[in-house]
Length: 139
Image (cartoon, rainbow, N blue to C red; front, side):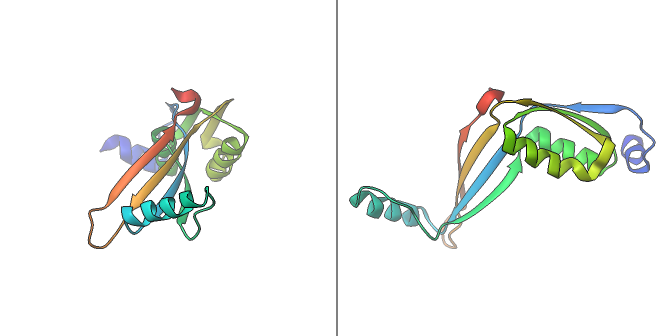
């Protein structure tokens, strides 16, 4: 693969444009659907409240961001066009800062996608991943 070898050797001087989807993802992990439903039912009896003890992980995501990151890691020059709010912009600047001038971020202020994933990972049940998304201004 001549192109991949060229990327790894840093001999390609072209810039690759990548756009636009960027999301901040929160993954909530449950041992079963029953665990979630029981917790919701119990809290509903009392008019609501916080569900405590739920494992949560925040990650950056979106095809454009993942592709841009992988290409930059290979040494490609990237121009990334996306939409993000202030927190998203700070996140992107931090993530891509290690690539220096190889990555040119073009971020328009707006609402990026936000996804909450409900993952059910019980030992005796099939793994299930349900996504709840607000696509923001990328729609």
